[in-house]
Length: 507
Image 1 (spheres, rainbow, N blue to C red):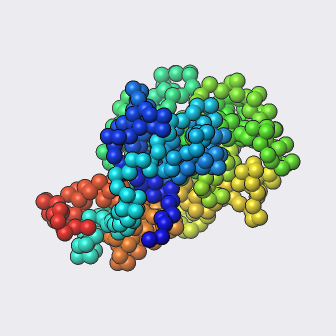
Image 2: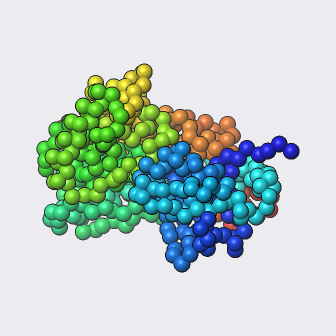
Image 3: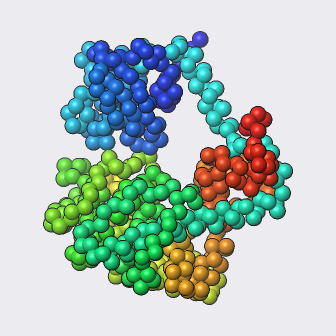
C-alpha cells in the first residue's frame, strides 16, 4: 500500500480525540503526561490548540499546544520568534527528533515534547482511515429537523422566522442598553477613574442573557451625548473585528475610550498612534519596510511614546490578534485605520446625531442606506491607499471599511442603537424609519452558517434576500438548532409536539 502523506490537520484530529494510549504518555525526557483537558482546536493563526490543561510530572499546566510532524517545523514556521507561542506548554510531534533538536519559545523557554508516534492507540493507517470517515460524517451533519422540516407549512415557518429576527434585534438593543446604563451610572456616581471593563460580552444570540433594567437611572441620566457616542464607538469597533478579532476590538474600545481622546485633544496622527500603540500593532524599528513605511511608522512611534505615559488602561499585544489568514480588507491593521476615522467622525462630525437624522428621514430606504454609507465611509489618506500592513502593498486601492462591512455595522450597530434611542426618548419617527429600513435592507453575502440554514431549512421555499431574514437564520441556529432546543422552537413543536424529537430517525 502507498505511504500515507501526513497532514498536520490529521495530527490535530488525533490530539483532539485523544486517540492515544493515555496511561503510557510521557515526554521525550521521561516525565509523565496526563491530559486533563486536550484544549480547543484553533482554526486561526497562533498555536494549534488553545486552553489545554496538562499535568507534566507533578505540575499542572494551563496553556496552548503546538503540533507538528517534526521538531524542525517549529523553526521552519518561525514560532521561535513569535510571542504568540510563548503560551505553548507542550510541543507534540509525530516523529522522534534528532538528539540536538528542540523547540524554544521567544521568551527563551524550552518546551517539553511528546512523541505522538510512540503512543498511538492503533496503527497510523487505521487511525487515518477512521479520521477520514469521521470527517465525512461531520460534513453531512444536519440540524435535527432536517429530515422532516419540508412538511412544516409556511404559516408556521414564516412567522417563526419573523419572531426570531425580532428576538435577535431585541437582544442587541438590550446589550447596548446595559452598556449605556453602566456608563450613565458611573457618570452619575461621579467616578473619575478610567472605566473598568464590563466583562466578556454575553452571548448575543441568547434571550436568556437580556439584562434587567436599572430603575435608579432616569431619562435625563441617559441623555448625555458622550454616553451614546461611546456605545456607538464600541459597537462599530466590535463590527470591525468580525468573528476572528471581535474580542480584541471590544477590549480596545473599552479601554481606549473616547473620553481619553477628548482629554488629550488628539489629532488624526495622535489618534492613529494611540490605536496602534494600545493594540500592540506598531511595528518595531528593526522590521524590514520600504522607505515610506519606515518613516510613517517612526512618526507614529514618536507620537505614541509622547502619549503613552498618559494612558493607564490595558495594552494589547500582537499575539491577541488573528493576523493571518485573513482577507486583505479584514486585516486588523486596515481596520484600525477605519477605527481612526470613526473616532474622528464621532468626536468632530457628530456622527451619532447624523445617523439618527438619516434614520428618521422619510425617503426611500435605498436613499437612507446610501446616506448611511457615506457617513461611515473612511478617508484612509495617501499612505494607506494601497496597503494592508506596514510591510505589504497591493495593486488595487482598498477601503479600510468596504461596502459589506458598512452594511454589517448598519444592521448590527446603527439600527439596534437607533431603535434603543427611539424607545428611551419616544421618537416614533426614528423607530418607524428603522423598521422600514430593516424590512427592506438587502442581505449581505451568505456565510457558512446562513448558507447551511438556507440549504437545510429554507430549501428554496423562502428566499433569504433581506438582512432581517439572515439575522433570523443566525438566531435560529445559534440559540435553537445548535443547542437542540427543539421543544422551544415553533418548527420543532409543530413536528414533534411537547415530546420533542425522537432520538432515532433524526439526522
